Image (cartoon, rainbow over all chains, first blue to last red):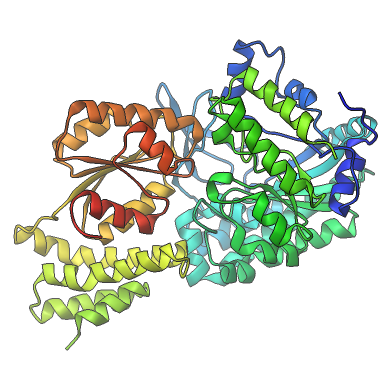
Length: 361
Length: 212
């Protein structure tokens, strides 16, 4: 094991500054089914233990996704596999019992501008702070002692739109009622920042803001760059401006192919993109050349290649991409999504070994 | 007198009211409903598919075009049914077992309908046997399998294996979704793969023997 000379916090901050680091920062995500598999293959612990093995540098303090009706969960129907529920956003969704996976959205309570203005907007603005401030404070204190890079986490306007009014209404309304879309995005952003301000008022000073919003899929962004710039980008800039005013760096998570909006991310003040899905043609080797000086890169190690369990293929993936990305000094390891259950526990331990072998400067 | 090319342009631009008005006017002029579909609406959605493939338009523009076409079809389908006109090709589509995600499947369905295919949508979390039963029941030319999650890719493989084993000589199998690649499609024995909703129309046409 190579001797480490920096804390995780120092390492990540130096990555943002493109300054020398001892090794690349590290973090990862896992499907619940993956951890279950690994526990059957010898993992003694949970995802915290896997992140300890990886020597993750990151620590989440809170997760903010404000809903109009916090904690509401009404079971409307169920079968042996799924439950149909009315959720905290007023929508009806079908979810799996006891396993992970994307829910099926059956209907959305906020299905019109009228419903938004009369019911959902007032409810969102009147709802209490929906992050646990005491837990956030405790996590910050513990993470500081461990030298971790601490971050606030939450959903941004585009993801919030889709959850509240559904993809079809959201995307059509981006053309037909842009003022409504702007209003939802603005209200959501206002509430997210209100909750972060409440946490900061506890006396903590996180290192970053890691915002989530899947605005792309494997072909492109969901909407055009111009539409993003007009309707959602101002809220991204507002979040980034707020973060910078509090001496935080900004990471943006989107699945999918976001190459068409990287310049807009930079213009908004986003400093790092994650997880950079390889199957959606995101590639650190190319983005290092085009945006490596402006955007740090976090991820891009192909989970499909991990899922082959072929160590030669995986080693080639890691060594090649690390070499290209580390040349910018702005790279952190993460899988390009969440590690799927096709990956065996021996394979993942080998991946950690490859990260260790190739991830030092 | 309204022109079919006007209808094509209205659909391509997603102008719902214009599309409905022009369809009504063409019907009033006694234009054969199947001609309105084949020479007015379908070419409009073909333009949408081509622009979508090339990132000239995005999902919102595709959705409003598909909605415009759907409104026009509401007027035309009863007339087509009364005249005994049936779509040339039938597609059975669904999201594979273990996966509740549906936007990709819905977008592809819209585009296939826009290309003149009859679409039988089985919904989400569709078991392999359900695909097979539906393919037989509807004498499907094509079965489309969608998956969002890497965790549900094995279900796609299982479904393709069942459909292949059934030996449906008239039925091709097409796969797609966020984690799916051409290599995976080849590996599990699917007949076709598309990376986006625009390409899905071309691939489907090729698979059923109609030039894309």
